[in-house]
Amino acid sequence: MVQPGGGMPDMQAILQQAQQMQQQLVSAQEELARTEVTGTSGGGLVTATVTGDLELRNLEIDPKVVDPEDTETLADLVVAAVRDATASAQKLQGEKLGPLAGGLGGGGGMPDLGSFGLPG
Image (cartoon, rainbow, N blue to C red; front, side, top):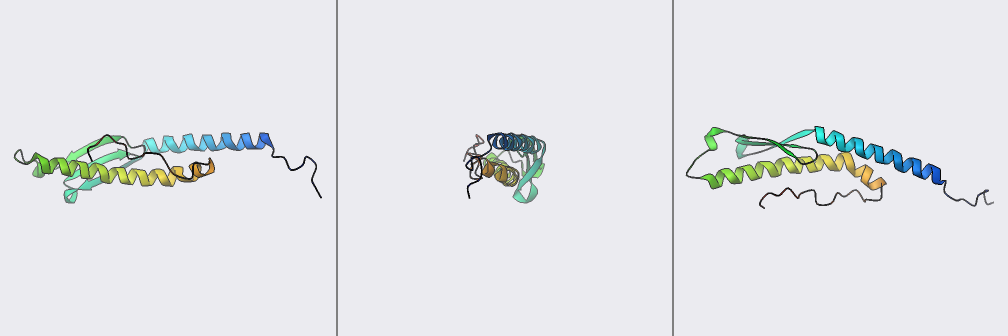
């Protein structure tokens, strides 16, 4: 038997669910902005701190690695530490936003999270 209303979706319920998901997404994004993760390189000689929304917040460099004759190694260590921290932040984003993006039809993927403006 066919139910009254012909099985049409309840638009009010759909809109309410979408609004709830939007609020959850905003809440998750705010939490990511407050969460900090670190990445290291050179056995801990360089440490980068990045927020969950990929903002570089801090960079610590052990004086032992600072050699005026070899700035290239220092630059490589900095880039590696920032990449390590960024990878951790992207993983955190996937954990926090993946289920929400999937529910919004986003397939769980986040576009171009690695665009940090750092040399590759």
